[in-house]
Amino acid sequence: MRSERTPRWTFAPVLAALLLQLGVLYAPSGGGAPPFAHFDKLVHCAVFALPVFLALLVRLPFTPVVIALAAHAPVSEIVQATLLPKRAGDPWDVVADLVGVCLGVAAAHLGLRRAKRDR
Image 1 (cartoon, rainbow, N blue to C red):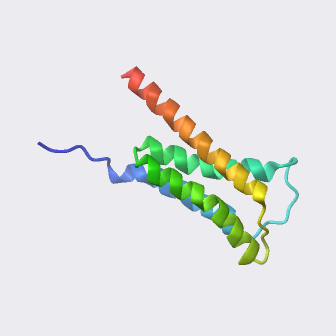
Image 2: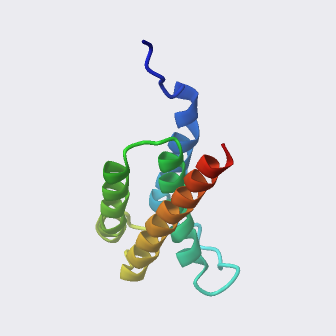
């Protein structure tokens, strides 16, 4: 009996979301004015929600995905504060990142539940 495997190409969006996250978090700051107050918190939330959502949607294991991305939140701010000269760490960015992880989990849960119901 052949076990069903997820096609490799389905992981491409997850990888793309992670690369986007790394670019947003570690590239030198553009220095331009944000379009509105706290825009950066919205961006932080989104770049953590998207990979969690996509990873769980393609059924990667829940616990390692959530732990890895939740751990990356404070690590990224420490790296920005200590190793990247044109970046600064912000504890509120960690909060926004963790909110993003939670939103990604919730959105994936709702999406998978809806897909199961629609079968």
